Image 1 (cartoon, rainbow, N blue to C red):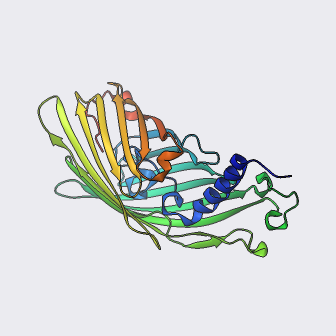
Image 2 (tube, rainbow, N blue to C red):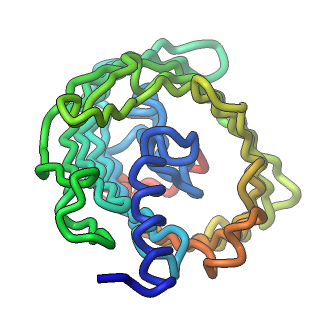
Image 3 (cartoon, one colour):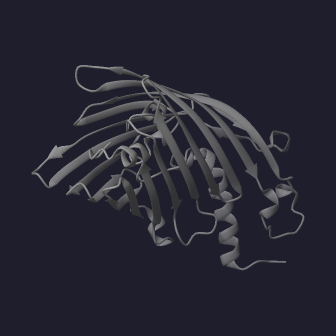
Length: 310
């Protein structure tokens, strides 16, 4: 039975996005516009850097309007160990793109060295990931097409990552390799081999006091994926009265992002970001949406009134 032209496009898109989850630099690892809010998502050395038990939960819906487009859930929790230079963290991600579902658990630990100005953290993480390929969800033009007659599969992989994170009152910088091992996986017996390749992240930023009520927080991130061009993010946030944050970002080979945050006096914070592609994708999607909520627990308990900007 022949399908309509729109259905054919949807089938092609699902296949493209599913394979693109492993071969395209933008989807090798889940992408976040507000990555600085949960630095644990890209750098294990970020664990403990907020000097409190800190938690963030977020959700991203990418390329709204496209069937099979990515959606990502993220939960990150980390804290220093009292009277120690050690911190622990866990980051849980759920990523869905086309017929591929990925669930990852990242267990992180960092060690802090105090410096004259700021501190330097060394981070390591163990990564446990479940991949699910639902090949049965693909509807082919000809029923029983042997080219797509693959059984659904689910399997686990282990990996590890490392990073460095330096932070002072006004500056921060980090470098990380969240997944060190490049891995081939998938239905190899059917000739379908998927690949996860190594990522490299470098990020840095500063806080500029314009006056008592107004601050500026510029930052940059460089991302290199083996076999793909280097990508960079340029970000700027304006902070008003330590409560209202408004910012914009530009991501090379991708698009722009507008974001806002609200930080309460009890250290509960909320955020939203809207991305719009500057590539040909803008013909078929209205953009991407990202929301999050975060909290710094110890600060509520001890009533410390020193906001964290990194």
